[in-house]
Amino acid sequence: MAGNLKFTMDQKDIVRFLTTTIDSFIQDRLFNKEQRTQHKEQCAERLAIEDGSYDKDTEVEYSNQAILAYLDWGIEALEEAINTYNMETKLARLDYAEKMLQVCAMLNPKQKTAGVPNYYLSAWAHLNLSYLWKLRNNVQNCVFHALEMFIVDPFFSRIDFAPELWKNLFLPHMSSIVGWYSEERHRLMMEVIPDSSDLSFTADFDQFFNESLVFSMRPHQLDKLQKMEQLYGESLDENTRLYAKYYKDCMNSDSTSGKKVAPMLPIAEPPMTPMHELSRSVPDFVKFGPILPKSAGFSLTPRSKDGVNETIRLEFIHINFRFFESVFTCVFVFCMCSTIQYQKVCYIGLYHLRLIIPVLSGC
Image 1 (tube, rainbow, N blue to C red):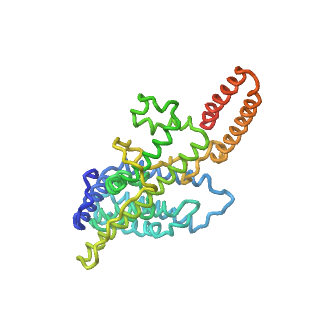
Image 2: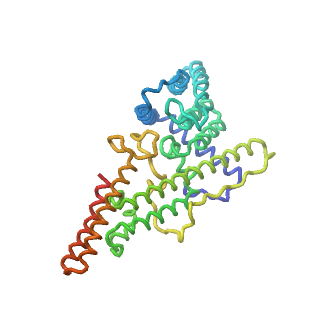
Image 3: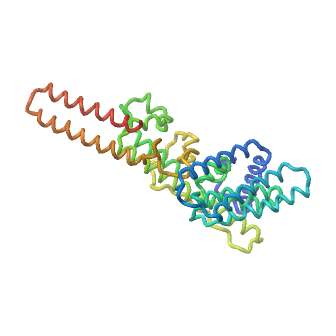
């Protein structure tokens, strides 16, 4: 359905599309207890990782502990409401869950609670509030909270909370951004492959998204790739938030019987205008932007196993590479007045050095 979404829809069509898509997504989640349980465990794993990296000498205030408890109690009460057949019990548990979840939903997204970003807690609360209002048969509030989740935290909403919903609501508008990233990565990978004229390699477009190629990159190429992926992710987040606000304005405008002026459709623009559009298909996992593993907690900076910042390690390798390269260059200049055999030795030394250093950077 997402692939057939047309940008020429009028406001009523957009509201109908939002209502149908979000209602279907929430309904599927409510029916799938195993998926809800798995999702809660994944989110708890991310919280645990962040708690492990939190300064143990820092005393966690009671208010911060209470906020995390409210979220947990709210989710548990919601689960009880979903599983019970007693209507009186269901309504009571829903009322209790709403009070608990609203505390987290109204957190300041620019601050943290016990080391956890508030925008993550708030988005998680909005997702569960969307479940709650669906159980109360209030589809409009259900849609509002789902959209607010993407506004508060577009990144984790895209990769953790509701990737299927993001794919239906927002991905159709991100084609120019995905195209830009695909072309920029294509250009960078063409510098990495051993022989860019090898048609057996370049004919397979998926090869340019093969992570094994990253291990062949030199430090400056790795740095360029990381900056490009960061820019790509930020662009997806910014435009996801932009369209979520637009969708929310459409819902608000429609609910006031046309008294408000219809909101203007935003345009998602890539960080840079691509030279040309790629006609080949882009793998689905690329469209969601950089994915942050659960084991990484909430840190966008890669960490090595011993806790040392990955950036520092790459910089160290880069410096050593420059040092050895300079040594071989000096030897080469010295041998210019000597035999051709010595010159060949220097060429071979430089060649193998450029192959070995990128491999070490992937260790």
